[in-house]
Image (cartoon, rainbow, N blue to C red; front, side, top):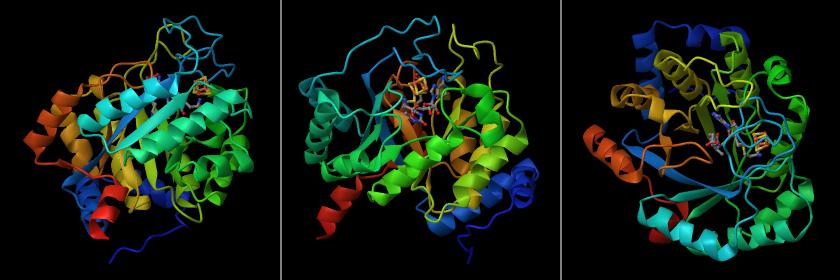
Length: 326
Ligand code: SAM
Ligand code: DTB
Ligand code: SF4
């Protein structure tokens, strides 16, 4: 029986990451089967409820106002628009809807009140509701929890050292504070990162060290491959080799064994075979739907064909399972 550990050292995680590739995939799969149903994949749908115009300077992001990208700034969607989008996502097989806003932080204004309405509405549809809205105070996190928020996404992105090279308008500690506030409100935590920013393997491993040291491990860990966006400082970064993605996923699975490891951004750049290796390495979640927040993603049908080919089934929302059992 493999123990769930919170005391992994950087050296130990580095050793895992550098295990010979096929051995690493095998170990990732072994740990995955020990803790999870390897035939199930959680399907999340992303919806950008407020797009572009963000004041932050995240070097990878199409939505930062200071970069000249093709993204059109849009104000906060209406509750009705979000309810319609949720229905489409649910019909397509998504058990979770993740609503993203290009905000530095949540402010206590009418927009936030509207987001709370959205959370209530999507929750009432029996879907797990997730939000990613930037920084949150303890009170705001509690309001989201009271509205029925299931998960909050707030990525560490990379190591503390490498974070400073990618984002200067906020600190790693700001990120950790928000994650702390989310935990206090008893909302599940979704926190992971991006590879392909120009970081070293040590940076990747250090991020996993921070996540695996948390007193309660994040319930989901998204691993994004950078989608280089024209107009951003990282537009010319080379695409992430699939082998790096496989290594990162297997290592995440091994050090945070019970979490949902999400094969997130960058799937349009990956072959089916590459994605199969990611699932073998221990990934058990994807974002489905033809758009992430602003960049393309495979459409629902393509992904359902992929699931059929691989013999995977979409996981039901936790609440559906709970109500079926009660
Ligand atoms: N504004 C909020 C924030 O920064 O937390 C929420 C939205 S933000 C777009 C959510 C996450 O998307 C980022 O933390 C980053 O990990 C990921 N992301 C953004 N742009 C990306 C890109 N071009 N390629 C891969 N991942 C990206
Ligand atoms: C996460 O880790 N990846 C998602 C979600 N959390 C919010 C976002 C990916 C965004 C990719 C770039 C874009 O579409 O703008
Ligand atoms: Fe703003 Fe989030 Fe993009 Fe950073 S990642 S610029 S905070 S939308």
